Image: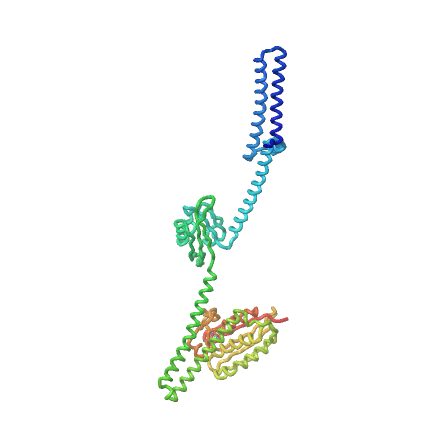
Length: 452
Ligand code: ADP
């Protein structure tokens, strides 16, 4: 087996010591002293040397131990590293290992800080509890979701900050069963209910077992879903009425009504009116869906407001004449706006048409345009009609909302006209408002940014 240099030196030192002892014995023997004294002197010398070696070894091992335990003067370990014996090798290995461990600890610290920062700034509420449902971690979003002061002190019992029994029950169940769970939870905050999807799972943390929950705010999604459901229900309802009528009159005709020439003509006219209504509803729905999806969006063009006004007046003139309502072209100030001419005309036709439909015979619908100094143009459509109760004025822009359902239907309305108006105007970066006096008339004002 090859012998390393340090071991070889030790062997050499011990051999020198033995030779020195032998020389002392020979010397003493020659100087006629007794062999016993000679042996005693050699043993004492050997003991002193061994003692000194042992003390030095112990001191060096002590330094290495202190270093391993993390409390040593850097200069001492540097001295040990410089030694060429086995302890020097050990000192160098320990120093290398200490550097690697230091690096790992630093990385773990950075990782931990990064994770804590991510959890703290997450939009989702994050909450961790121990086996006794005491909070061990919570972020700002969680505190906001439950209406608590951030930061929530670690160790606070969950029921002290959360009033929703369903969340407490969810976490208790996870702790009991050790399985991930998920639940919709309603939390009332400042009088407003918000809906959260809570996902909880068991947590094995260094501080002991527990559970973690993440709360996603799904209130906007729920709202959208409700709007969608209401919309589908409304559409079905709107379509069912004319379809039922068409079917009923067609069956009456087939069951003998055809022989009755006078009535059969009336029935067919009713069928035609309902078919027209169905057509109006579907075309308004298509317009709305195109506006919402942006499918019909062609590049905006410069549109003359006066040209759109004149064209719209022509479109509604027949309906106005039939209803005995005068159309008045009031003060007109020319302006160009950016958008789609077809869309702008649709806005004006819908407003003028409503002015005619919800008017009295011999009434009047007036249209005017004004340029304002702030760079806008306002188009006012006013009528002398039935007016709109003030508490319902904000609702008339909702889809299918009608103040007087029967009157609207009778006049061929779909309840979608004003929502189309609002969509188009907002798309053109404008606004639409209404002022109305019940029994005296209404005024709709569309304000659009003018082209330079
Ligand atoms: P529609 O006219 O097809 O019923 P709209 O969306 O255009 O649907 O209008 C919604 C409702 O607002 C109408 O049913 C009516 O009750 C009310 N409304 C709209 N314009 C007027 C108006 N000029 N005068 C009185 N009520 C109006």
